[in-house]
Image: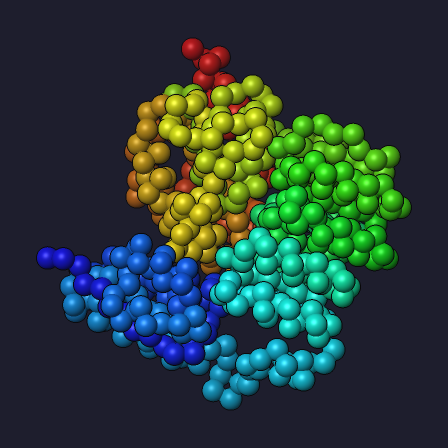
Length: 499
């Protein structure tokens, strides 16, 4: 019997992408449901749903401001039950952002009228509309954080140039993390206030550094995300340069950390020149870059842990005691990461150690993975190939389940290396989900599992509770992502020594 696909369109009904992804996963988990998605009806989203086999004839009539519900199930009864549940969830007052009596502005103009003192607009609408909303914000005197993706590079350049002329900062597009004045925005963590300011073109990079600064006894003044493309040659680091200026002028910020993948050469020089013109010490972490000539007030580091320690003037890459980790299998390490920059940091360590490593998201000097022909493989599960039409693994950790189950059965692996990222916006219990998957698929003897938890005890999931769940499942939990990679490398090379 062929699968049944049902669609329903809600005209002019908007929910942000994170809420829709969460509801999609809930519906997809119902009995008899093969896949489900709730997405705004933009052309790009309709194509994603069509590619996933979730778009019936009725769905093609949706416009960009409409919500499409797509269900694919084993039979008509299961599809109809899932559709009914999705509609019921959408009709709950909480799904629309408040109780029956709660008022929420429907336009930026109405929001500003209700809160005239506001200085920042957080924009999470389909990418087709994000630039228009951001332009409204900057023209009304607001800075803009654009959570939305699917914004063209040309639109980003034009928007940021206009914002710069108006003296307004644009964070993003595809800016997933920020902490402004102690307030976590989007995927961020609850960290103490302090003297370290962060500028980052990486969401999980910002999260790891800010959480490690907190873990090492420091605090954060502001963490400003700029979007992953800001340091490309086409954009020229517009937001990065403005963020550096803002932190230089901020009396609460004493030291500045910059996190990014290696920028275009001219952009890197412009950024370093701007740092040189400031009075505050800066820590520069171009993850995966080669050593560069730094200004007198700047220090280059090569790992996220190194950035956090340098921000607090602590010894570099001081790894906690490496435990003995038995590896009854081979010597290879497979990394399954939800955080792209955490995956990059692990590659830095393995590359520096002279190990053969490949990745689907390689740093400079690491070959791109075309087949599993390397000793070690680092996979970024947040890459588009895994998240197209699906939630990010920080929202839905089941994205890792299939790869993890396959890895647990491999005899050539010494270690499976994983990250767990918690905080606002993330899954309620990623460690619990990981523990359940390990329980279902582990077959001793098998590869050791080494993990780190990015987060704090003040996060909704509580880092200590997440660590305890992993340890109870037999996972070796390292203090940081860097430490976890060191432990994994040590366990792999230990295999050599024992033979």
